[in-house]
Each structure stands twice: as structure tokens, then as C-alpha cells.
Length: 436
Image (cartoon, rainbow, N blue to C red; front, side, top):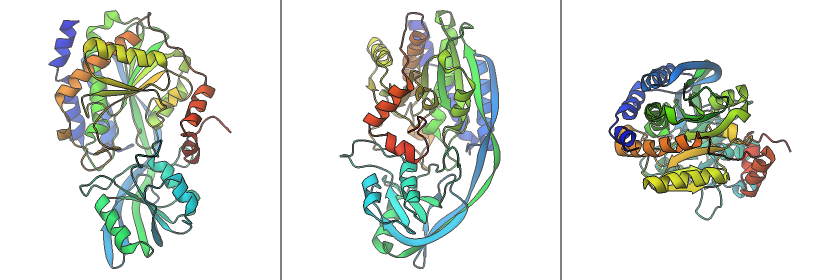
């Protein structure tokens, strides 16, 4: 074991690929930059030793940002459009709904108004409320426009898509504003008429998933995944260049241990994650889900040293992560709750065992994610290498004939979401797949 750990801990393969990705520039879903990132990832996986590295293309709703602003009084306040906002303008009375909790919308008449909400939730609230959930509460209430205010200081307007799988372009114009601009809007113009204007080019586009494999040619496989796309306003180093760099580094380490794999390992770097998990949905719909033994989805790794595993109530996955952490002396945390907001979910929602692997930063919410500040300088090569060691060992154990994890019935996943109070939000954004 010492040899492959040592080789991984001095390897530059993952970090070099991370630099390659961030230097491409715009990797927005459906863009030329996203395609270049996919091609470079395919080539990196092949060079790492994985076989049959390839791209699989699919159609995606294209969206390219233009200018946006909030016109308040005789001023134009800085904003950025939320991806998949319609190309439209709307005017209405500004109402600041604070955190934008469900009860805030129930208690406030937002018909015809411009609704502003924060990007975080209060400490006392028992669950995370996604941006799209807040957006569709506003849409359901008849709001004219939506303003998403960052809770992080630093003049950083947040991005993040709206829209649903069935209707990929949102219903009302939507923009992100910094904490500072949001505070100014609330202080000076709440209760007054403001205009939200968004310019966007809406068009047909193509995205692609990257595939490669290692290990025996078994019917069953372990998926090791990430996404190559990123929001166009930043380098996308944390979200999710680091995850894709991790997949490449793991491929190199696993190629050196290929004889230890009892089950095929299938690497997938998805396209179009940031606009509704499109690439992973396409992949999940095309394959026999019963053939997937487990998923290791890397989305949010490397941002801090301690890894956090969302295990979705799969006890065997929790035990495996904790055992690897103990054996290698590396800090890990496991979270048994459901996590329906990354590329593992199109599989896990139907009962496939899967991890969402992140790292802890100590920040509330996304921190620098989804802002201009998602840049390479926030990351450390040491964290990538240490976590690659841990995740490689975990994957070898998941791919062993000795490892067993029971699948769940979809009804059990649905019940867990209900128990965790996540079902209501998923239903309003069109992400509830289980019927009434």
C-alpha cells in the first residue's frame, strides 16, 4: 500500500488537470469551453491509464448571458442574470422577504412584486432551502421578478440556474445581487417600484458526458463521477474543476491497482450539471440501474481538508467511509440524510447506493461557490492528494467482492425525503419523481 500512496501524494496529474480546466475560461453548459473541458478530461483519463475514454453527446437548452440590471429610482444597481432566466424585463414593488422561507411566502402577498430573498437560511431552520425552491415560491405567488441576494460579504453577486426539466427557461426574470447591493436596495427602495431587466440569448445547444473504465469487464460497476461544466462568471475551480481533477487523479491511482478490482470502475464526468443535472439524468435514463453497485460522486471536494460523505441512509456506505478514514488516519464526516442536488441523485432517487462527497470549509452555504471568487487560489494541492488517497482506497473496497450494500426501494427514499421535510421543496421545483 505504501507505494501507491506515496506515488499519489507526489502526483501532479490531478492538479495539472485542474489548472487546465480553470484556464479554459467559460465552461457554461452547452458552450465551446464546456466541450473543450470534456475533451481534455477524456484525454487526461486515457493518459492516466483508463480504457475506452470517450464522449457521449446530448441536447441541452442553451443560454448565454447578456447585460442585466436593477433600475431603482434614478440608479442602475449592479446584478448578474441567473442562468435560464428569460430574456425579459419586469417592473413591480420591491419586497424583501429576508431568508425567503416557505412561511414568508405564505404570509406575504407577492403578486406583481419584485421579490428579493437571501441565499442562506437561518440557523434555527431544520433544512436547506435551495435557490430554485425560493424562485418557484415567488413564481407560484405571482411575482413579477426575482432577486437573489448573497449572504457572503465582498461585493459578490451569486449565480445559479432557474428553470425545470420540463420548462428549462424560468417564468420570470431572475438576477443575483451582492449582499451589499441587496442591503442598499432594501434600505432605499423597499416598497417602491423597481425594474429588473435581463438580456439573454436562448438557443439550442449540445453538451456531453465523458466516460472511461478500469478493472474487469463485469456486468456490475462502481461509478466514480464529477461534472466538467461550471458557471460562466468564474474559473469554476471549486465547483467543480476540483471534482473532475479528483476523478483523473483517482483514475491514475486505480490504474496502478487495477489487479485489485473485482468489479469494473466506470468514470463519468458529466456535462450540464449546473442547469438541472441534465448530463447525469441522461446517463441514468440510458442504463440498467441494477448494474450499479455504488456511486462516488465528487462535487465539492478539495475545498477543505475534512471530507464529508452524504450517505443517503445507506449504512454500509457510512461504515465503509468511516473505516477508510480510520485506517488511513484521515478526518471524515458522514451525513446520513438525503442530498438531492448533485449528479448522484438521478440514480440514488431510485434506490442506487451512492455518496455525495464534499469537503468542509466552515462557511455557511456555498461560500465562494457560484460567485466570481470561485478561483484556483482558494485550493491546496495537498488536500487534493490526501483526498485522492482516501477516495481511491474507498473505491477499491467498494469494488471488492467482499463488499455488500443493500439497495433501497424508491418508496423508502421518498419516505426519507418526507421525513426530512425536503419533499415540499422538490415538488414545487418539479424534481419530485414519485407521484402523489
